[in-house]
Image (tube, rainbow, N blue to C red; front, side):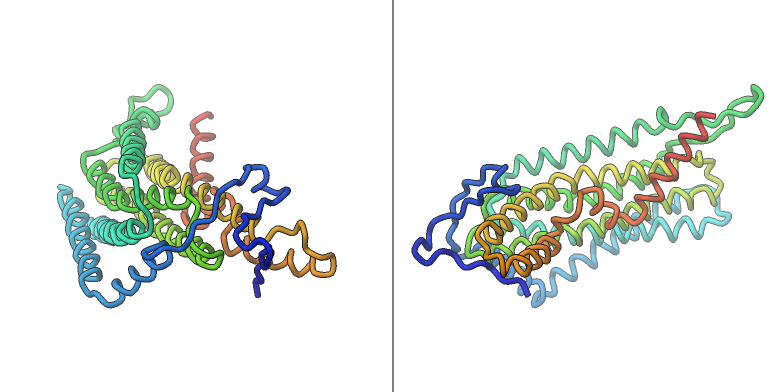
Length: 338
């Protein structure tokens, strides 16, 4: 069980300034913030109660999922070849469903975060425009980064497409599905950048809620990355003359876009968690006889707040295709260098 060190009874309101550790390096001087009506914990609890008791949220997410399924399947059905296109249509429809579900989930989490903290919308728009610019730039650069396959011994260039109108439409569908999550992650970053209000227990509860929320969004975005690769692989089964490198490169692009969404928020959350641990669970003045137990409790708390993880480690856990994609990209580069 994690036990919190009790504050000095003679100075109940004095902030704790650890003499060492990461918080000391960061020159932690943040004042306490009293819990207020409608604070982080209260807003999160109210949001969960509304979501549990209000059918409209579930209906909205179902509607976005169905719309995404229809759009994804419709894009695949525009393929001129009717031979063996069932797999392509199914995978594209699954991508549309996952995109619609991610869109609805991101919007519901966005509403929850807005009830937790005042969000500066221009910062969110800046994050969204950055994600869109990165995604659009990488998609547009596909023909440059993946030149057409050339035949051996001076043979003519083999007709193989790196970018098609259908591929752009499917990529846009996945990007649109992830935009609410990108906005929510940017909003979570703002929440974690400021001192959390309330008692230490309320602050810890808020940190755990935010960490859990981000992990769920990363998991949904990871499904989108997997399906983006799957739909490009399935496109080769319906007569679309697609460069084999596009399958791997699409996973690289999608993973990099998710990384631009998630990395700043994950780093800010870890910093806020580290400050919390160093402030309330510092080992500076723990008696020697209790030092081992206090260190174990501190380690448990750091694990709960994912302070033992790196951003890349979190991305690798959330994006199940990240390691195979990196390995495949390296293999493709080595093959092209020969």
